[in-house]
Amino acid sequence: MIKLRGLERRYPLGKEKFFYVLRDINLHIAEGEFVSVMGPSGAGKSTLLHILGMHDHGWEGEYSLNETAVHHLKPKERATLRNEQIGFVFQQYHLLDDLTVYENLEIPLSYRHYSRSERAALVADTLDRFQIVGKKDLYPRQLSGGQQQLVGVARAIIAEPKLLLADEPTGNLHSSQGEEIMELFRKLNNEGVTIVQVTHSDKNASYGKRVIQLRDGWIVNK
Image 1 (cartoon, rainbow, N blue to C red):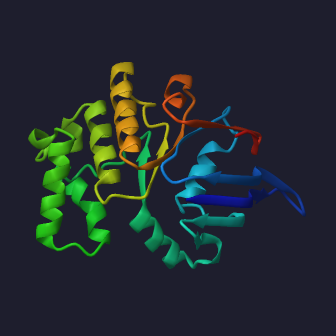
Image 2: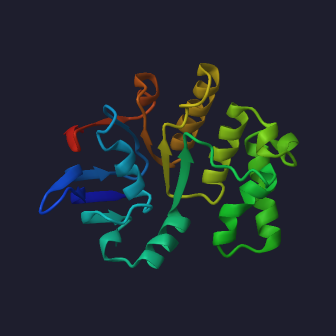
């Protein structure tokens, strides 16, 4: 599903000097894998995730997603591919405060060619699947942290993305809430969703089927 070859991310540091966040990243991730990316702060974990999610465009090298050469795409084409194939779960829940749970779930569907009735059916199915039907008319501020992250995961997968990217998804949650989210990830992966998560937690990493270690921008174990 994902192929990275010679991928690098650097920032200028004066004349002809650069600070490298990622160095010579070569990585294959197969469809259906659950991969955990670990490493100390500043290792390049979140940068790698944002490149995979096509939020960061200032990198060099080759990146293919499902045989599509991302490095050859224009920004608008990358945005279309991202909206069609990738879902995101962040440490900060990134729900829109002025929208209800129902409306937050409907947003990803607006990027696709769904009719109003199709969107309503998908939202209803997702509310039922995540057992949050009773929360559909509430606003994020009326939910606990765990409930907000549950809605965040539901929003990420409502349009059935091929790839789910998660950046410290349980970082703001109590341990029991975090376990609930990780068990949900395991279930989604068993259903065929490819997952790449960034985590500092050995316990969370153990939910993955493979651990990739980053240090100073280099992959040191994969």
